Length: 472
Image (cartoon, rainbow, N blue to C red; front, side, top):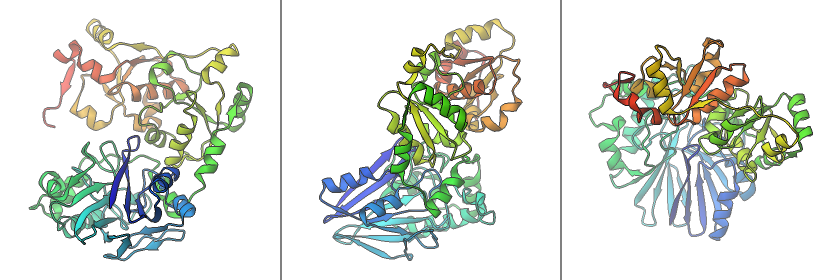
């Protein structure tokens, strides 16, 4: 028996490869099927099952193409109603895989169809449980994502189901059973996931706040719902794609990898009303970018920020990328359902410059210089684009919390005549924010290099300019 976690940091997502006697089950695959097929082929094995823990909201699963290319059977848990051929398993149903078995456990709570998969070894002993978004390391799945599509399925209702699922299906397993969750820290599917991505039932019963033995359902519901922020806007659209089906990722890649010479790039940009995304590193982007483009760098959490900020999944997208990175950009767009990339600028920024065009730049200031500025002025307008929870934990006195997640909604609250100094935690999100604001006509913006991490290491850390919430 072979079990492998395939973790994708950009999405904080874990897929799983289980193999026994030449038969393979894949759990919660990403959209691109080739890595799973190649892994099975390298082991002279055949993919028999594609197991889905639920209809995902934060990414488009690869179950359809993987099944189409391999003949594998797609499996969902009870109550799922996919718009394509799949096996909807019964609670407790046993799936045979070589010499091992996988038991379907219906664990509603994150969603109504949410299920976990209990792996038993060759001797029939419980070995590991693949919990999807039901149980994370240090947390559990949020119960408020279904309401966007089904208002009658309230967070309180799902929280009650989740309380029962955890206690009746998960906590009854032996302490040594390995827990393999669907996500790690950074996922918006929970609120305080641990950075670890593997644990045991016993460890979670000991350390996970939601698995306290003496916890009542009312306490569980209150603690689970407390502090939840609005989920990313693209989640409902991804759910519908996973329920109803979607187009071929191979065709999307082919369309997105169309190299466009400069004149064609400009013509397509104008005629299609495309959005130009510059995916280079933040340091390079700030020094020079094509006017009107926005920054979302590929070297960080690219796909989730695309999903949070671009409201139309079919928005035509043109790409600026480092040479050789174009396909990675298109694939990562497709992972979150952005299926309309229409090409990239051949030659990148160099081709723009070679034609005699000018670049725009981002005005930046170091944390040290910003500290001196604060000492010399009575008022400085600071936009902290971190999430509300980060801001509440610690922030600069007088700073305005302006979360990047909701920049489209709150942009009109800013004054174009004021100069704003913008920062996040490390400099990635603030540069995205500045680039978006500049594309909408806000010119008086200064990015604080290094973000809050750099600010906290300056003299501001030792003065009244820093406010720490000691209650958290």
